Image: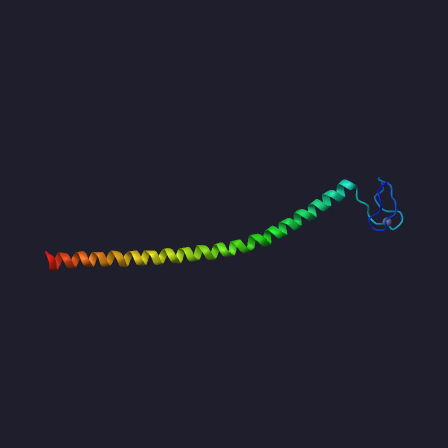
Length: 95
Ligand SMILES: [Zn+2]
């Protein structure tokens, strides 16, 4: 025999409401489904919070990577210019 979750009164399996306190009675399967849904909601909430932080750090990492990449391009451009200057100097004054 199931018991009323509200008052603990013994109720019939077919009853939809507790005849003692009037609380709505859920079937065992419905209780499980409800608990499952609550657990899923909780998991989604937790996952949402956990996902929020890595996404932020990922954006920062991508920004840092882009900045480093731009710095590398500037370094490369300066290096190419210096090599071109050396080659031009050798070509003009050496040959
Ligand atoms: Zn009851």
